[in-house]
Image 1 (cartoon, rainbow over the protein chains, first blue to last red):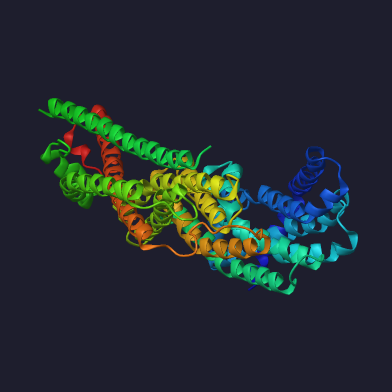
Image 2: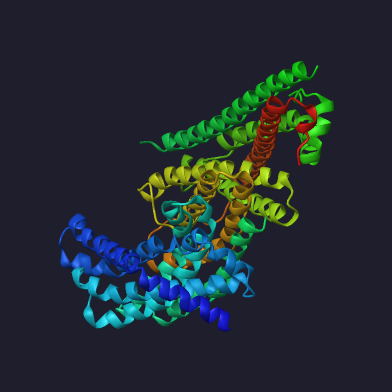
Length: 223
Length: 48
Length: 266
């Protein structure tokens, strides 16, 4: 447990020290959202209708953008070897790194979303629901993204490939995240059902993704 | 467009894709066989 | 189709050690292929005849229903091929048999082609039936996701230089995909029932009359045979490609040290 917390603390510290990466992710999110009205026209009704989905898609994209280096730094400076030869199971190392990614990148992006919502005429009273659903979905994005980061680790600059591989896997999170949001904004159906399914998906990803990512790493370094 | 045209297009696309797949495997197979034969002939002449 | 001409003595040294079973695979697949090809041509030919000539036009959809005889088998084969990829991937990761990787690698482009066909014929069917080429129908969307998955498998294998590593990581991706695919299917179904416009005619109609069912089954068998045949040929091509790599590596070594013994490599 202490080893797990040590990895977690180390990754958070490293992520925070490299403020540039978080800035890039936030900036990317901002630009993606800002460019949409320029393409779609400034019709506030239309923007409000699509704002929930657009904010979710932007979150997925900017989260993916920051996750492709999840293991790359540790591979380059050799600390991945040290971690892998330590006592802590690789699955838990992956989990710690994914949690750190969620805390350093996912959470700021989630908290940034309502602000960006202002540009899309997103109803401000619903900001709590938006942040709540995204806070459930974002850990799943970090954990599933970790699989992609492990798979594309030997490719080097695998950001684009990672997006191609992993975006289809985010479809369930996107669907139930946006459904929860729309239902609580007065859409058809109750918000509880999609919210529960979203939570179940997140928990499933938390449990299963570390095994898949750790397996992908083992295949690379232990044959 | 008439309905028959959509039927024709569907079967046409299927035919084109199938033909493309067949051409792909046959052509690569032929190239590889020739290359293997060439390399093995070279190897034989060198090793005597 | 004749087998690969090769010197049995050098094969005994260089290949049997690395690909002992692949060598046997080349032998039996070479003998099987002519029969399999003939059978495929026969069944698909018969299927075309019953599908285009014998089967009556549908009372509701008219001639358009004939698209079903290529669309549905293509969709089935798209899924069946993914199953083949997953089973081969598990086989490769668990037993480390090189032929399993060959099978997975050879199946992926075929699966992508079937998925592409299912999408294109579905959209050509949708135009006269629904009035538009693309509907965000649950099934079309799921098949589209399957297509993305095939693209991802090809892209990952392409991006990795080390072939052994590429095979293993692609296998991991295929297995992860097989776990997530049902979840995606469930999500898309759920999403589609939420958004489905009221007046969509189901593609398969109310029930499938027997006069429609059996041409469909004949075509499904034909498509399956087509897959088996092409998969075998593509696997043979891949085995030959690996043989070529071994030969070229061996030749480079002979060129350096000129001793035949170094051809035998671990």
